[in-house]
Length: 199
Image (cartoon, rainbow, N blue to C red; front, side, top):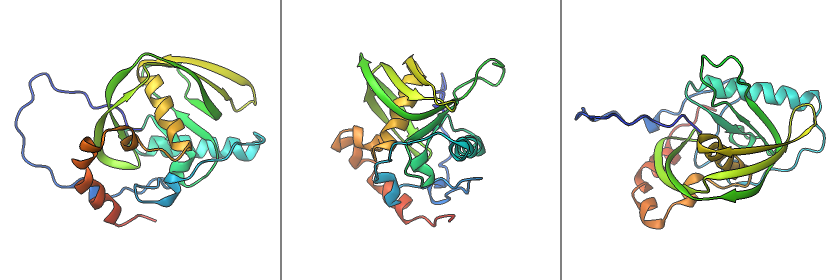
């Protein structure tokens, strides 16, 4: 998931932008898969053992997230790996105490409230929509030391957790909007499907 866009207080008319959705970026060390790739619709499998290979995957996914320049969350399915694992980093650059979340087998235990917020996705560049989700969540997961942890989250963290866990179940954020709203995105989605892949 990319960082939310800040809305200008006094937006000014601007020149039409070039269609960037046709230029799908290459990422490293892992390549992000884009809308239309069948792997994004598959359900990831639980990780049986967190070993050095899994911790290496965590490091590579975090580096891939940072390589996007604006990413705050990434699921393993988005890099073509069908394992239940996500990385999240919503920390501010000047917050030295913040550590990214590396979550194995994350599961939503409970939700509360409801809020509508604009969402985007690293696998669907330049496409956004207002999505209704629970406002608060409690998530259980394993950390890289194989310890069970619980995260109580609201705001942006709650939304990113839900967005990335959806990916592990083959669900995209556009599946959570109404059919009428989705109609407005059809043209952009078709262009994205037909765009040349960097892999």
